Image (cartoon, rainbow, N blue to C red):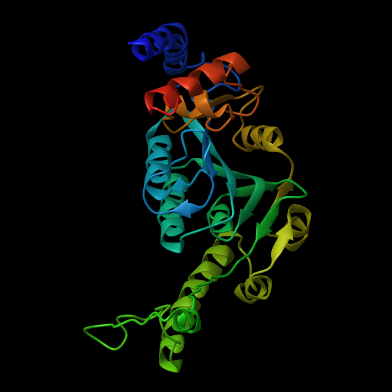
Length: 317
């Protein structure tokens, strides 16, 4: 009984009012994230965390975010169809991830550009590997001088636990339909033929990556190949090498994008992507918000919300 009363009070006093505010959203204006109809709006899309196939996600109490291809494709498509959007600024903070997922997202960036909208990438802490794959698709790239970027290459890893299993007395029996069905198995050493097969796959994806960079950056393919040995570069090094166009933070990238498409004055920003209200209420982070926006929660409100969920899970008396 006491538990139900406490939950009811927390819902009435904390959660419901905050959810109303969250769902109502900010007012339209410079730097804020609501729909505008002026045709002078810049769309903002975030690529946060490793790039994976499927949906984006984050832990309810601030777990690591992942950038899902399905959600990002939908956001890019929505921006393409919105006549109020004159350009799209993609904020990338990702170490990379799945090559097929990067390709899917990249195809939507191509479609966005083909619709006549300019695409600018703003790099955060890191925009490497698959993150740079996406950046190379943009019309222009802005990085911080200390951003970690590049890592143009492909990697595939497996583990050989055969020796460990032997020490533990663990044996395996494999029944397969063909000689390569268990390729990459940790239960045994890889054969030379299997290594050749996997190396061929890595080489093919690498060539696709080089093509993306050479086309997107309008660079000679052999020059790209010399840069694409897997190493990372700082933003300043990348600019000197032609891998990025400008150096500056997110706000500089906003001004740069506005100037690129002829928007005078402070542009209106519209953030794409539906966020789970509990995501920003409970994490206390700025994830899903434009830079400069806060979730507005006090320490007491954060503690009350966390206790509500812990109580509901039976982890508090």
